[in-house]
Image (cartoon, rainbow, N blue to C red; front, side):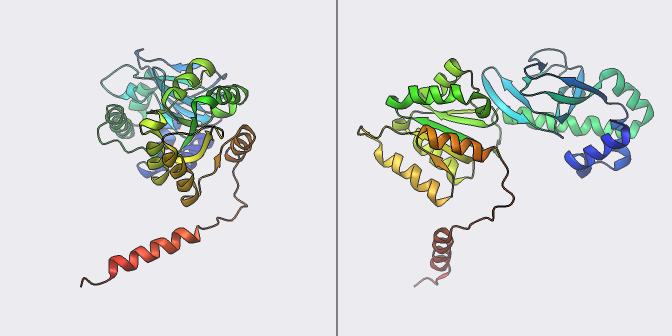
Length: 299
């Protein structure tokens, strides 16, 4: 990949054009060294010296802190931003979930960038330093707004083993999602299947179902797999029903058994640009009615 092609890629796929000119981005492209890495390789280790900034050109990289997923990076995103800060070390691990191609800016090549484009190099240093600080604030929970979209995994106690069997059979597909789970389900998914859970909530009867319902209403759930036990009574039945109702309100696809869950995974893993968006007329009508109530003059 030549400098012009790499510049075109960053212009199209990264956030850099919002802050840098094409000429400045081209100066960065000229110092990136293209590398290929296999799936499963660790590109960055927590606590190790930050010696390079990496641009993900293709593939997918999962960043983790301990056994908790921080985010899933795709083409056009950067990792290793701490190289351009005073920290000097990585605060997370980064593992390629599939074969990746990266553009690596080493400390030595950043030095060459400083000589070739001193103004641009200072701007890049400030830009990536600011993003790193923001990420650290989010890591510490300071003003963090979660914009990720999760796949929810829930199971009644009697159905947990079925969910584990399903997860083992579909592990590679499930690894493509940010996962949220309730109670011991999240722990079992990690210990028995090796799946990284991005967010673990309380168990269902202790508020986990309500927490997922809140995430649905905030547009943080793209799909819900809930293996329900159809032959037993549950003390939090109202919360379970509420989850299904919220999925209907916000048109979130939901599966309650292995067959439906497999179909749901396949659907979510494929873009459907040809399918027209079908609006929720009931929700539109409700919002319209509520708006009229608000607009009515006080009596």
